[in-house]
Length: 407
Image 1 (tube, rainbow, N blue to C red):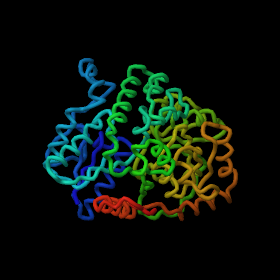
Image 2: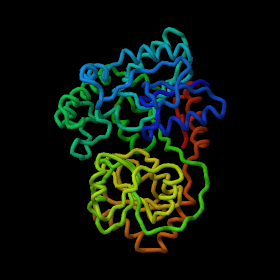
Image 3: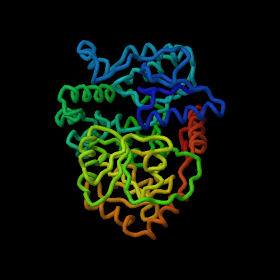
Image 4: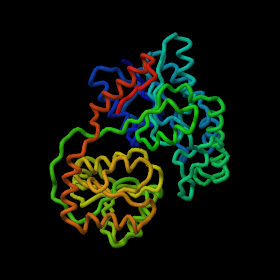
């Protein structure tokens, strides 16, 4: 089978890239052909045999002349449509797997696939993995600029995005987001997608509000490392690892002065993290260094204030035997067995978070039992995930519309 992965970034940048690289590599290892389409960048580690990519769009550092053209390009990219069309003709995929494509690549890539089908006479299935809420929310997080959860645009009236200045607090950028969302809802572009993989049941409920998406969504949680891990001697700290950004609940960490945190990451709030006397900032970590930090923590904390999808960080922590204290928001509760692999707390409530953390840090017997439960916890491995993924694609190719996936 030939699968074309489409994602705006083709270098390590976040969770969606972790997902496509690992999935693509495993698909190739079991005999499938995989190529990639996205933006050109010096850090790209995957690509396509035609050697074609769209121009890199950096909204923050591009020159003024270039930035003047961004509003139109972020709504519809003729360049992306043309170049992916050439890649389609060259690779002739059976499946085009969309990931993060809005704004930099734009839904013009969907038009390109439908055009290719018409000209070639070949049926191509469009699969989309939703890494965020972009198809129903112009700023992709279902959150206002000031950090409040917001579902106003779920009714399809994206004027709320403009009124609230949801995109970077800018009316101009929010107007572009509103226009982009309204255009593709009016054109019913997303009806062309055959199946939408939702990494959490929570996300499915939000996408299903849109009648163009309802009936196409299936739940398939993210995969995790297949390696079995052993018990590690714990040290006296609580770990946060991830981005230092507002929607990640960093304010809760700053307010919880009675908790000795170790923070591993980077982001806009790094200066605030550095100034906090109860927090040790070790910066961005990866590989064995990060694994050691996770394994030796009494627990990790995931205090997000936005509707998290299916965070790899929560699963990784549990995999290494470290219970998670997580906010009761989005897809986080689906990953934590309350009282066994962690505790949930009210999102945005620092006192609730501290109380949940202390259920572990102040009770050694509970901490030890949770470590065992975490190591026994079963998430899908990459091989198990891929088996479900391939069965899903095979059902799509056979036009099976009912019960296309049994979790």
